[in-house]
Length: 68
Image (cartoon, rainbow, N blue to C red; front, side):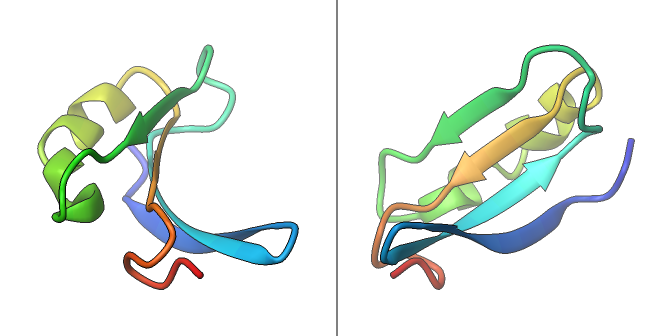
C-alpha cells in the first residue's frame, strides 16, 4: 500500500487539510469525516486498513490541522 500522504485542497476561499491512504483509482473512494476534537487522528488505525483496498480521504474540518 502507498504511504499515507497529507496536503491541502482548496475549495473556494477555504483550504482543507486532507490525509490520504491507498491508491487512487482502486474502486470508489472512501471519504472519512472526523466527529471529535481529535481531527483525522481518530482515523489513524482504520485509514491504513481501508487504504489496502480503496483510496481513502480523511478531511479536516475548518480550524483543524491547517484547514482554514
